Image (cartoon, rainbow, N blue to C red):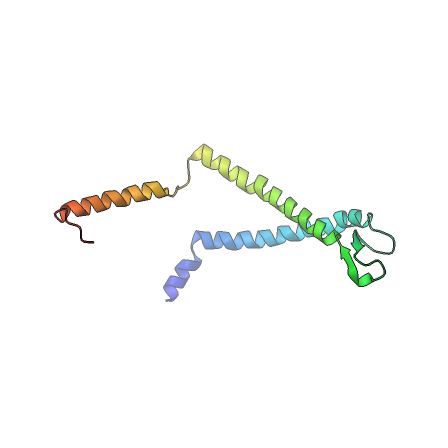
Length: 134
């Protein structure tokens, strides 16, 4: 049981995944600091009178009905920045590397798999005298 657990932990993809999670968490912290320190103050500049930030009140005389748009915009900006950096620094170079140095192991399509199964069934059916039971 411990041997199987050790093999699981020492697989390359488990270690790569752990590294990716740690790097992703650190990168998210950097982007969050950027938006809190730079983008949020820009959004707060658009705030209305008496309220901090960008938003509106649903009922004008009740402060509890204030809808703050700043955190929503900040989350969207965080997402776009992170997605762009992951795409341009990870996905795009990886796809270029695959094109340049060969293809990664490509899974067979459904048609290829079905053709292979058909051929195997035809081979096994001919070796059993061509008789199939339903």
